[in-house]
Length: 307
Ligand code: GLN
Image 1 (cartoon, rainbow, N blue to C red):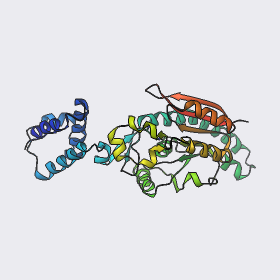
Image 2: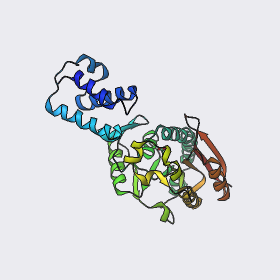
Image 3: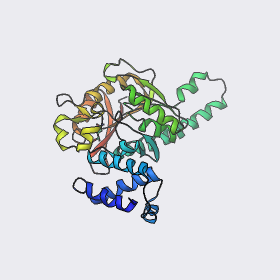
Image 4: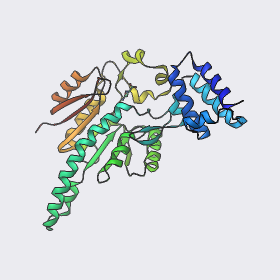
């Protein structure tokens, strides 16, 4: 069977399930993964006869797509903030909205870092300061519920002078995150921790960030089959009774674990912006800003402890 013949079958088999452009996109991704071909090389080599082993790989991917498996799990990786991340069924597939959260943190932390570096160089002139003065000036970031490590690793890559820690309840997710840190050549201090049962974090941080589970049961029906069937429930869902449980717990911990002027960043449920604001103000946070994502939905929040 030729590449073109398979492509025709591939389209036919998926037409009922996916839009045309998406099928085309799947085929490109798989051709690049299995044959190392760019889009252009696919059309150049369309009359190439596929070897049995190659055909098997294509057919396996096709049947997994028919079962609604996300393409990122089929090929085992995805891209986030210009970096490659391995993913599997223990880690949520990083979303573009989360890239916007990373961007927001980076813009403000780069400025912060500039100020701190200037302060540091001033201090170095008076060489009598205790070493702790410099340590306190190191910027520390903590990512809670890191999953594939996408937030922590992207921040570490962009902010080489900052120390980044990340935690997750899932051993399997942490394994993947550690692999991803190596793949992207950054150091992140990963910790296994169930945040709902934590009493405090090991350090105080300049930035605490989290994209915790926030999809309520009542929103499940709006979700796509591939998410529901394959992505980890523990990374996505919260009960209708207490959908802010992760946020409230993290906010309480942040009160003792954020440095003075430290910032708390969240990715949030688009329908719960108002509730989030009220909860955070009640916990003693101020300067609550909510930012919309590229789809115009309330998606990101930043706040600090009221002085
Ligand atoms: N934005 C994700 C989704 O809709 C949910 C991410 C989360 O629960 N933290 O699939």
